[in-house]
Length: 293
Image 1 (spheres, helix red, strand yellow):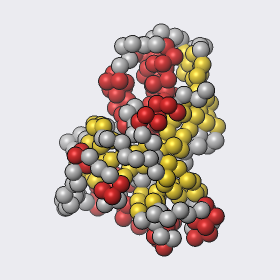
Image 2 (image 1 turned 60 degrees about the horizontal axis):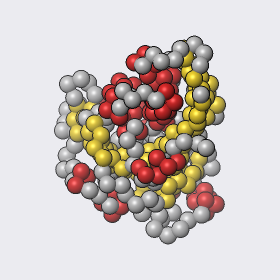
Image 3 (image 1 turned 30 degrees about the horizontal axis):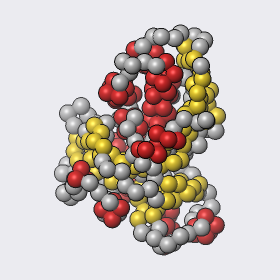
């Protein structure tokens, strides 16, 4: 048995670092939003153990890859077959704050459940496996518009925002999430991390509210990676209503009120950027588009 699944990316409409947890992680309050940029994950049952092939980016294909770890965790929990072959076609920028690795893991967990028909692999049980793999995996098992608390792995579904176009701009740098959070921790060790009151995201939001969000990591990343700052300034000068770093970066997303073409936008940006037009997705759209026919 085999099937191919779309593994969708995300942006963070808001990312607030509330404080430091006893377990050493940061307490977050973030709003995730699914977008239609995706990797492709093909699963084929059979063989022995987990075999992973990666194309589109030079990524490891061993246990350090979240897709590999997700398959191993699933088959360890429900050992109904001896192995699975995974083909991963990368399209989501790596180190861009778009959650590609976590999305791949979620696609593997859900795909194996579908192929094997494991009724015991409930959404709640997959969420447990996902949290052990990485904080963002829990969101990708839900999708749409959602509030993330705790490490970002406590997911509360929000009413989906209307679908709309966004521009993604990724400068030619890869940002390490672990390194950014460690530096943020060092810089904020002697002060209250969040001095702003959180918006009432969990009471529902619209795009006007989303435009008032922020990303606490953005100033640090822009200082550490001047390329990100240059892209931010160029997007603002191009007339973007909202420009915000996604996650720990390096990708910035931009919303424009008036239509803007790719050639026009690229002419205003540094030449080594990757520029993509994307669209936000509701959960119903995710369900409809998830399986590649």
